[in-house]
Image 1 (tube, each protein chain N blue to C red):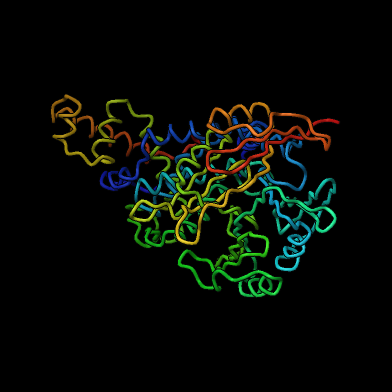
Image 2 (image 1 turned 60 degrees about the vertical axis):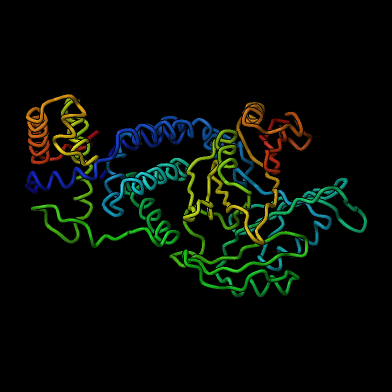
Length: 299
Length: 184
């Protein structure tokens, strides 16, 4: 054992953690673990459908097959499921992430309801090549590939259906940074704090990280719901709010629905068992996003 | 480092996340020590420590108990979190070269020993009598003078000096004793 002088010990004591912090973090983790119960029962008991994450973005456009085709050509998306009713509900996989895509199938099944488009932050092995492919697949560039100070090479495109894709390659061991998914939803709320508070109270979001500029604008923030990261940056310039529709797996739809309403959401649809084997409830948050809470039920 | 107790704790938490608190209690000091030695600022160390445990809780179902020890897994999460932070906020100082030397210890590759020693010291502080602990926090964390501490606690300066002295001696004795296995 090395001998520690009193002055060495005094120096080490300057790094002593604050007791309030230790207790606060424990409470925070305990609160998070009660909602997590959901996610780990997931892996154990199948609350999240196999292959899905806790949160899945749900894009709705007039030409759903067109968007699927674009995602396949630009990003190598793979269609894993297609259900045709009045319109289309499809599921596609990109890397380790799932997207739900719904809407119309022109010309036979037109759709003129509201469209739900999303801004995505997608990690790829080679930003320049994927940017090029996306343009060839019909997207328009909103930012040419460039090295960013935060350790990514990134670019931006807008597809013909209204979605924005921030294409990025992390400059680290892997092109997807640790803790992130291949495809991450990137929100642009007017203000990030109230949205983060809502996601925390309603859905047990945790691991909140915020990066503000000196004038207090939150340039970048991210939260984790279950196993899924959601990113955001406060709206500015061309980056204006793009309300997003989410499909969110929870252990207890009824309880989750009540918690969301308590947190300030309004009801879209009360919890009910749907014929495809899931109990689902819908809520809208005060920021324009819609959240469909779901859990598989025995048929 | 086969630790059957730890393995049980991890498996319990994988089945019931509310049991994660046991793992948190066991590893808090170690993670904080690991992080604070690199960022040197309490606010940043707190944010990163919180992030490490949040990530660990979220990814716990994927932790493999037959692989590396849980503590090593937490350190790898911490390492990644430090790297991410360095990337996102380039202004933040993440510099392992500017770490102060701890007297006596062999230098270079024993960073982990230093982390463990610091974690051990943190735990010894927790075990101090309340009045000694308060004085240690006031003097070394809050950086208050003997006089300020005395005024704040309504004690004489002599009493504060004595409490500080006793606390430091207890800590030094603790640090001299061989590390207990398993701690916590």
